[in-house]
Structure formats: structure tokens, C-alpha cells
Image (cartoon, rainbow, N blue to C red; front, side, top):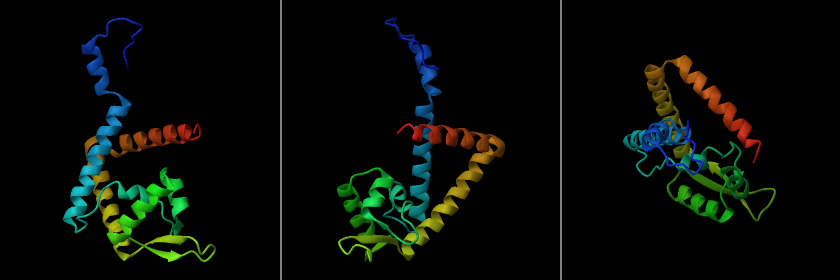
Length: 160
């Protein structure tokens, strides 16, 4: 719980203890741990050029391909930024492009075999993380936490 401020002097001891239980701080720390774990694990499995930020883009590519515009919309970035990321992912061998049959001015982005190998490795890493989390907190508490987070983000997504 965040202390009230109402132009009063903030009790720093209370503020620091409340900060440790801040949902923003806790989710940030968990995300940082998961990103670090994933990158290290995938580097040891041969994906040395992988960055955890790539998953946001790769995970939004449909099986039959996705246009740059649609991928940018799903990932929440500009088309120009997405074009740069697509070139990077293509250069690193995770995706390939084919001419869009419906609109010859655009291409469809597809995941290639190396991209599929990456996803198989990511699934394995995430299963390992799930087992670790279950061992620490218990499967029921992890399921409850995931249900609560899902409820929060689903409701908050409707506001935007």
C-alpha cells in the first residue's frame, strides 16, 4: 500500500517497505528475471543472437504469415520501427518474407525453421520456469496469481 502524501512529510521507512510490495516493482523484477533466464538459456542452446524482446514480435506472426502493418499494430510499434525489426529478424535467420498475393506492394512475414526451433526452445525454457515457480510457491498459488493477472490485464485492455 502506498502511503498518503497530502503535503505531509513522507515516512521513508514506510515508503520503502511499501515499495517492495508494489505491483509495478514486483512485476518488473519478475519480468527482468524471466528475460535474463530466457536469454541465458537460449544462448546456451545456440541462439546466441537472441534477445528476449524479439519474442514480442515473433509471437505475433500467424502461421500463414502476417503483414508488417498488422505485426506493428499487434506489437504496439510504428510501421517504420517494425520494418527495422523485421529486417533484423530476417538477417538473423528467424523469419522470411514472401510477396503478399492479395497486395503485391506488401509482403507476408513468416517464421522459418530456425524461428520454429527457437519457439521449441522457448517452450522448453518456459516449462522449466513453470516448474521452478511451482516448486517455490506451489501450483495452486501460481495458478491463482496467473488468474488474477489475467483478469487485471483483460479488464485494463478494454480501457485502451
